[in-house]
Image (cartoon, rainbow, N blue to C red; front, side):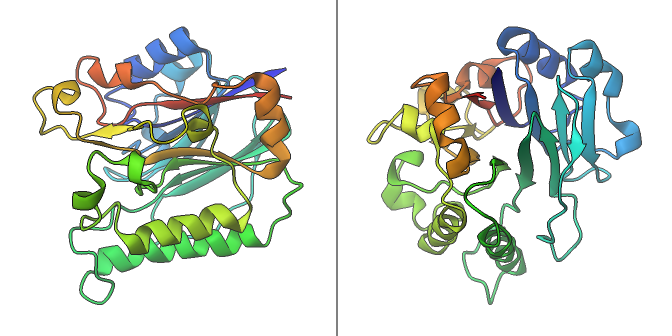
Length: 268
C-alpha cells in the first residue's frame, strides 16, 4: 500500500479548514500532521476534516496558541507521549497508522536573541531539541518511526535564502543547526525531501507575511521537516525517487498560512 505522509503548520486550523479540505482533495494525504492549530480539542473542526476524508484524528490542543493534531484517512492508534516541553505546552502528539509510528512536533521559534543565558525562549527551544534527541536515542533503528513537523530550524546552507546573513538569526544559527544534527543522528533519520532535491538546490517551506510577493523576494526558510527512521528508508525508495515534496503553490492561496505543506510517500 501507498502511505502518503504530510506535515503542515496551518496557522489556525479553524481559519484554514477549507485549505485543508482543498489540499486533501488535490493531493490525497493519508496521514496529515498539523501544527499551530490554535484551538482546544473541543473547538477542533472534526466534521470538516471528516468530510474531507480524514475522519480519524488525534489532538493536543491549546487555547489560542500552539497545538498539534494528526488527521488520517486510516484508523489511528495512540502513540507514545514524549516528555519534550518543560512548560507543558501542546507541542507533541503521536499516533500509529498502518503500523508506522508518527510523531508530530511543533518546536518553539526561540525568540530573537540566539543566547541561552539572555533569552529564555531560545533556551527553551534548544531544550526541546535536546529532549527529543534523548528520547529517540533510546529507540531502535529497526522501528518504523516518522518525525514530522515545524521544527523551526533550517539546517543546511541551502535551506535558507542567505546562509551568511541567516547564520546570525534565530532559526539558522550554528548552535541550532548542531542541535538539529544531533536530533537527526539520534535515530539515524533520513530526509526524503532533501534526498529528492539534493543540494545545492534551494528548498524553502516558510516565507514571511511581510513580503508583498513571497515568490518575488523568495526570502524563505526550510523549517518544516518529515524524517524517516532507517527502517522506513526502503519503503521510501520503493515509493519512487523524488516523492518528497514541498507544495509551495499552497503558500500562494488566498489568506494562506506562512508555511507550505510537505509530503513524502512510503510503499509499505
